[in-house]
Length: 162
Image (cartoon, rainbow, N blue to C red):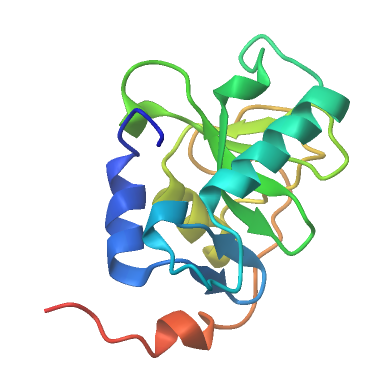
């Protein structure tokens, strides 16, 4: 369906945990082909189509993000922002994380993989606010908004593979 491989950190995360939520604040989507037909939430394909539509209608192209076709959604936030990748280059492991605000505008880019991004948001080292218009390498330089709480029960109770 996709025609390329996904970044390794994402495929390892999905293999271990599957699709789900973190602290009711962040969601991670699995590729639709891995979901059961009666899955309660949409998968990556539908969310990617929605993110691309939003970018085409309300997004602000930048030097780095010129086209909606460059965006693949892998997650979302409780504030309806889209989390994804900017599919720039041939190496998926080098794709930066992209945050597209629910109201459009210019996407925010983070020079890191999905797992590092999620860890940074949950630990308070990264603020994924789409209102910050600069590209982040590693830790954020803006004020931080750590998430309090725990991993959602869906993932917290799931046994780890041997």
